[in-house]
Image (cartoon, rainbow, N blue to C red):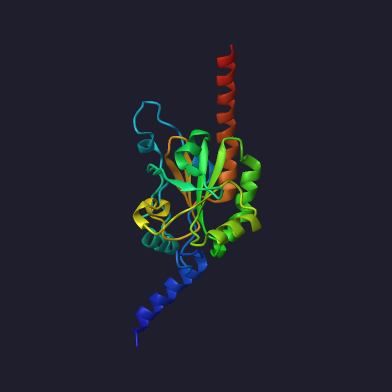
Length: 237
């Protein structure tokens, strides 16, 4: 028999587990999101450094929220990439067999949401309506979603993408070699797992809510598109 104090601790962690929700690579429960920043806080993180230095070193990272849930998430996902770090490039195959590189996508957009998901992950599917709303509002305006499936079955990946009408660009991660896989580079051990990356390749934030992202994109993309139009006018003059 476990001592009562140990039993109490187990009950607390199980409760946290259930409250947070999410999926590990073997489909068991593990954390999803917490401590979501406001759109104003997100924008304050995304100011580029024009000095030529590593722009990611100047990204303003939010202070962590201290609560049982965030402490638990920090333990489970303590090794994954964080805000202010450089996003590693990766190249994966699309459904048509074409190679898709993260940095190629970044070169054509101001902000890219890298979304790790799988067809068997209930919380991943639950988030899709909000993701679709954001994409409907901002897709093609300098914002793109790179949906990285962790499905081991190519057919399951393709079927779920079509069934749920998942927006964005679609690739599947080969996790047979953990260290060289996209999820391995980002040290992802639970999904859904998202990384908001700017055109410099800097991770602006993780665990971002879609409502805050939508408001952040309103202002960020308006400025980006205005700058593009100004550049076109200068080039044509």
